[in-house]
Amino acid sequence: MNPAARVQAAIDILDEVIAAARRQGASADRIAAEWFRQRRFVGSKDRRAIRDLAWDAIRACGDIPADGRAAILRLASGNADLSALFDGSRYGPAPIDPSERPASGGVAPGWLVRRLTQSGLDEREQAALLDRAPLDLRVNRLKVTRDALLARLPVAAEPGPVPDSLRLASGTPAESWPEFAEGLFEVQDAGSQLACTALHAQPGETVIDLCAGAGGKTLALAAAMENRGRLVACDIDRARLSRLPERAARAGATVETCLLDAGREREALRGFAGKADAVLVDAPCSGTGTWRRNPEARWRLTPETIVRYARAQAHVLDLAVELVRPGGRITFITCSLLDEEGADAVGAFLARYPGWRTVPVDAPIGRGHGPGWRLTPGHDGTDGFYFANLVAA
Ligand SMILES: C[S@@+](CC[C@H](N)C(=O)[O-])C[C@H]1O[C@@H](n2cnc3c(N)ncnc32)[C@H](O)[C@@H]1O
Image 1: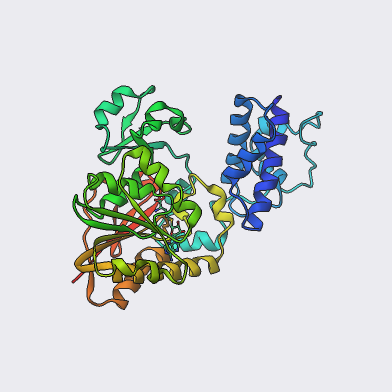
Image 2: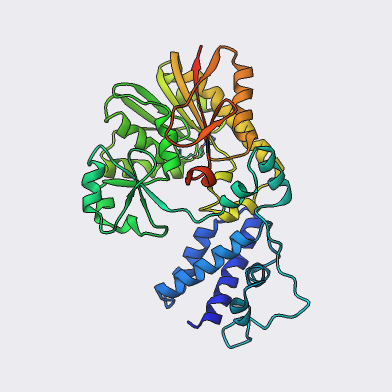
């Protein structure tokens, strides 16, 4: 493929990504994967170049662009080499008309930038939300030590910022390595790893991962518990939860799953009421802390979505309280940096449950923010997270 054809390919993918963002359809990752699946003749070098271009354009456009061409034109403004590829050649994009307007730039839609500012993130921190993320691994202590895994990996890795983490270059195909198939590691952002450690899950305890999804954090809890005790992974999303048994088998982790019925969660959870030593609440959220991986997610958010997430967070916290034994604990996590889904959500919880209090977080990275702890790409080099430890007073 020549460079101009790559630009047109990126425009075509972006058209689909933009249309999907408007109707809350498939993610950019899925769209790109499907686009390449249907065009197997596109070689791996071209794929990488097209994807990089499309993702750079997504990062460059703060608000949803009119179309893929406007998005790439935003990237091309001030970039003569890229502009020159709009050359009208056979597979390339048509020449730029002087009246054409590139999409607007910025970090996110204006209302969202204002919310991030109100949540204490300055311009530099906001820009870092769109950095390229490195690839972090969590060493599976159930099977291997960090040093032993380091010695086996086919590429150089740096120890990451939290004890079981290793850091590799962005885009490293770690999941195709035999060490992954053997369950020696999981791909997991170091911030996510750290948030799991906040629960201090211990061997022999009864621990519930209430919003387990496909179990990224559940597997970290299983390792912390050394597979001793009872670990229950719950979620209302059947498709996500159904991926957990296979992942747990690969990791050698012992986990029970419990599918919940949305709105009637208490029915399936009844048997656990008052029994859990610890509950992890990795609550549904807007994901503003994960734009490094899903930059188009910021085009999908509305003020109403944030209100809905805040309500869902209060709901899962209410469920968690009922599961905890007297003296037990909850760690509340969101991967959002908006106070509505972090400090304010915890503040509202403490107001609803005067018998509960927060316990200080002690972590090698991050900083206190309101009643909990915050990690940001700009300050900590991880995805953005907010978490708080809650105990019944
Ligand atoms: C942030 S994701 C969890 C990610 C997962 N813990 C991980 O580490 O990969 C939030 C999850 O909460 C689930 N969820 C939403 N509402 C819920 C509810 N009422 N009860 C339990 N899970 C819920 C969603 O289906 C989603 O999988």
